[in-house]
Image (cartoon, rainbow over all chains, first blue to last red; front, side, top):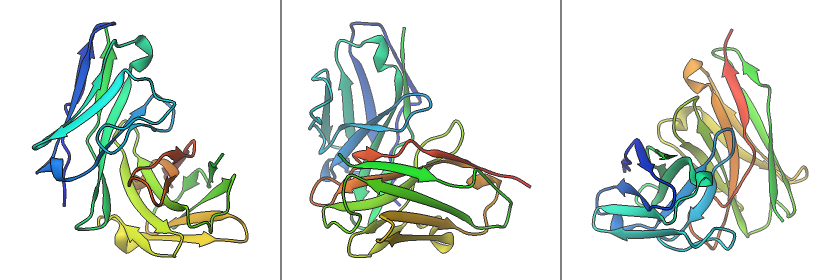
Length: 108
Length: 121
């Protein structure tokens, strides 16, 4: 089955840029979606189709997908961005949703 | 606006069947607009997709759970349900119901708040 690998944690100072990677075999051939999950809350979709943002999500959130790695970038990081982030794809070869292992973003 | 709300027993005994319901408001569950799914999250761990059901009735299950999972729709009640049989402590988790726009990305854009299920005798 398809596997998505994320770093367990990323630390970033306020105002700086956080980059969260999501690795998968030839992931560029798939559409990658990203979720933000704060403690005790349901996940929130922040990026879909690699780089599109729902209207309610700030422009500071952006995404890219190339080769074997997709990346979620959070610019001008704020304290409120501290959360767990998950990438996700649809594996069309098996008709399955696959979530990444998750990355905890800590704002220093 | 579409809203989802899970309901369940909270506590289930080992070897029994877990039954959860997701109530849908804001649109009809039989609408061709949406696909419905279940995702779970064990304490302190990541998200795991359990399965999904389309408005057509087609179901898709995580292969690791497929032998124990049934997802169905109750159109008159505007709900969809999850049944997970032969539960063990490893099934202890927060269970979320979620939806996606069928013509859109394979991503869940609406989620319920989640319900905690503990498997214990």
